[in-house]
Image (cartoon, rainbow, N blue to C red; front, top):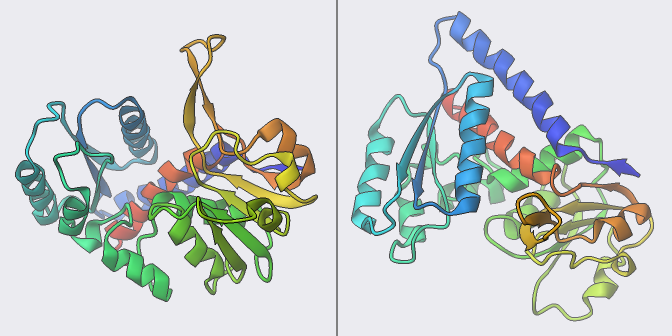
Length: 292
């Protein structure tokens, strides 16, 4: 069984990005600049944005965090901040950290982002380009998963890939990428969700399972065939009195049960999570180079 170590791979990719940034600076080029808008003090969002800021420092990017702690800020206020970033020529790419407070329409905010600066890959223009196989910013988690498959030489062509979950952030784009014509695509893809019948029968046929439904330890050993590749996208905080901070991060896969049956599997934490952050850096580098 191969442990697909996302943390190790993310560190390798960050070192590669830093070399490219150093070369840009040495030739008098503009330092890539990533900005982020964060509303409120959600623990998960604060942690995630903190990782992004730290990663920017590690690779030599310039970063700007616009943190509005008052969750009562208006939708118009946030739309105006997006407008400023769209018009700021020094900012190559930016993200609006989700979730936003309920009174702010997240779809409206995403639609207002300039697609050329949409390094989160959520704008319909980028989603459409990705679907057509055109150069696009691919949303960070699916992009990170493709990098894991690529760097660990996981064969995908002709394989049966089952994606559990149909979210616009992971499940849907992942199914498109896995079936597309690329070196980490050309798979036959089945998308499963809460209305899927006989789910176990389907997952037992899978050569590759991508679990992205947000239910801790949902995928058990009896749902996985011998030799399957399992990618665990889940990151749920579960109360644990024995843990230092009172909780542990659990994936969608019951790791200790499933891992012995797999040819390769991602852990949680340390699998897909670190690759999500580094994918944002890769997208920002593309933005700085005007490659999309």
